[in-house]
Image (cartoon, rainbow, N blue to C red; front, side, top):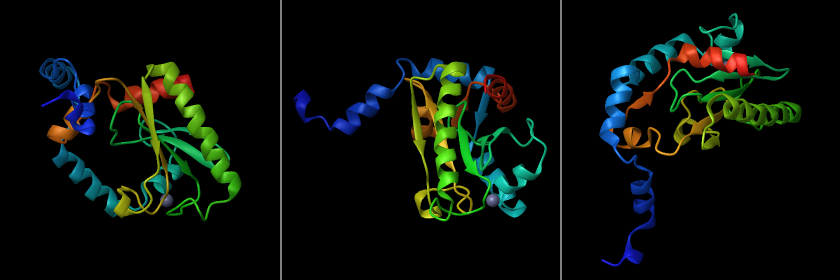
Length: 188
Ligand SMILES: [Zn+2]
């Protein structure tokens, strides 16, 4: 087969694999933190019973337990308890609405400024190679907390846990959540 006929999506995926996936897997699992799918399911079910995780976090004192890094006038920044990568943060309005539409324009504006500041803080603390920034509106779109809209800010590194998510449905975290929390608060 000629090179030009290779499916471009497939070749991009192939190129994103680390040069030596086995050694990366071994070092990540042995020394650090591995979230497994069964545990995520357990935690998600548990949290559904407890009500809105964001409204609950707002009522608590800020620290490694509620994971709120910064409170603004209309919105706040919180670490994702189930991160895709280290430093996965969420920008959340104080108001409990399922989508961006019902929010005041000033709230949406502040959220965008917080997204911008979050990327700057992550750049300083972790030197990522890129970011995924996005909103899942509605359970059909993959929103984990569909009733309270939030913007994901996910730092990415060349050769990060992509292959683990795709092939093994697990997330490899090279840092404990509490350590990430302390670093983000210090860098904010
Ligand atoms: Zn809420």
